Length: 130
Ligand SMILES: [Zn+2]
Image 1 (cartoon, protein in one colour):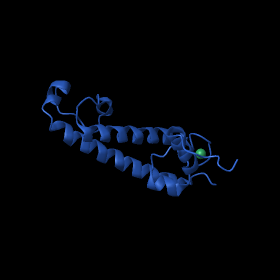
Image 2: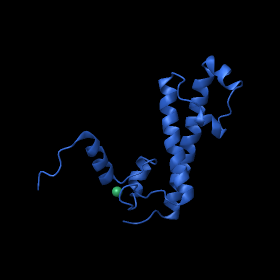
Image 3: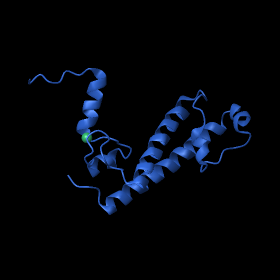
């Protein structure tokens, strides 16, 4: 398996940047519809403001909560890009295939480790070949 090429890396970086922008706009729009927010923040939030993402998810809006979770995943992926660890499986350390990252740019594991990870939590019945 190969490490990400510079071109592929740049492509994923762009996808993540776009996704982050779209999520911030969505959250911004959803939040300003909530009257309570004026009391929490005092003024309308700037979608480009990082501290905006640190807002409590206790806003009681499922759609905002979901968007905030995804935004955090996107931010983590961009941090990994900056630190040079992006595209590296968090479990086995091998490179995650570009095709997988293209479909799911926030992936932290390769497909095999992700499966094992999920099996572990579901008590999956592997090892029948032993
Ligand atoms: Zn792995």
